[in-house]
Image 1 (tube, rainbow, N blue to C red):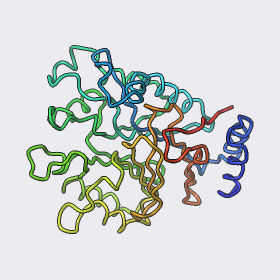
Image 2: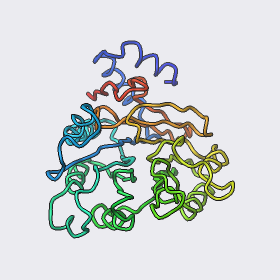
Image 3: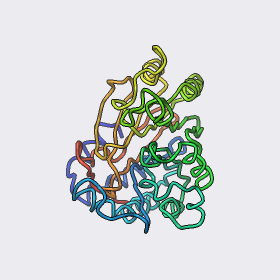
Image 4: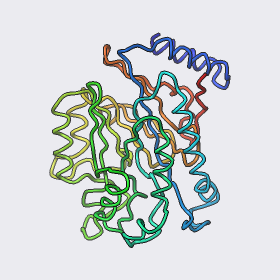
Length: 313
């Protein structure tokens, strides 16, 4: 089934449970050994008993933060239920919401939001790969080194990483390692992401292998420094290797945004499970044809927090 027919089928009756079930059936019928499926989740913002209620910006944020656990759990259970099975899950930052203490030992003496987040994601039937978001750091109060040590000890996660799977690369970039995220630097500006020289060279080394690559980075590309060292930086690399890069996906904005190909590769910003348990991306890769599909794209309400639910049968 080609993309146009697929979108027509899904879009004909967007709110219809029947259509969603037919769609699920079509995906199963099209499954083959040449295809695999993965899912994306972002901005889960898990909290704990140390969280101070009412500390967000406005009523919507104060309400949503209290529902992050059931909403991520709902997304997890839906993803677990899919057939054909999702093989990998990638979480694009803001795994938990801020730090209740600046004391490293506190996180090993108490049950905190880090432990709560891990408990939920341990319930996925498939591996979950974590990226860093701005709320997974606290660049003014908590050193980056402490955050990295906690992620290593609690989640066995490095600051940036790559998964090689079935001939594809899945790269988690970290836009909190450059000068804009260093409070001792003259270029400190925490609202702007930067990767730092070491990570940029590492990223290019991954791309030089010319394997089809999916790239995940928490801040949208519009919010990252284009170049960091003369003309060397993230955006020139994306343009240089745009034939290798399949897709760039970010979070942070908590809304669905389609930037098209203005940065070279296709770039999506995805909504947050913090606001909607249906804020996930279900992806199909056809290794034989070297193609990919965003399976629940037609259910997305662009420029909002929301998406209609994908129903498995």
